[in-house]
Length: 191
Image (tube, rainbow, N blue to C red; front, side, top):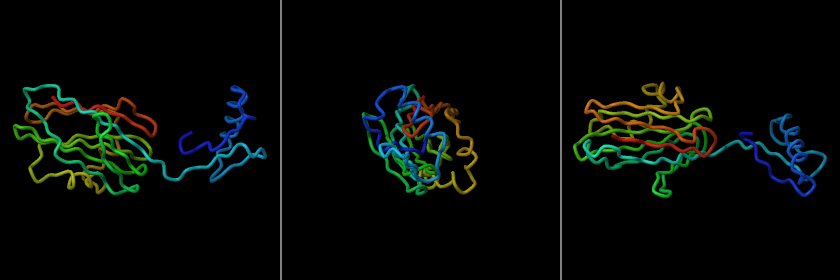
């Protein structure tokens, strides 16, 4: 169950189907803060801040469109903010909870600019692509627009995939390959 961590199940609950049935029965109660059975071996605790990760793999599909270099990464400050790091060649966004996002800004050797936004809103993933950017339109400026009314419609759609073709003819696509849970994955296709 999302938002619940099982802290301890000892040898009394190691009988496979019996353990599953017992755990299922306990989870039906869904207490508001904490639950302990009369058997001290089973404890459930509702977590208030669930963290999320989004693992973003970038694929440049069409060399004729130019080479797109990643020039900026941002994280919005809601839900305890977050960080970007690298993991096995992918860009990993780690967020403190639902309600925040990050952006990746790309610029091609032909001068084209685009921002990819990914995040979690109301415990569900979302994505967006912004093309046709002026040089001054950085991720630091665009990322907050998903929370002040100008772009919040994109966040609220909670799309698992989105694609758009820029005025220059470059197709951008974001597609979540793991779209549910706390450890999400998406592919970013540029071409």
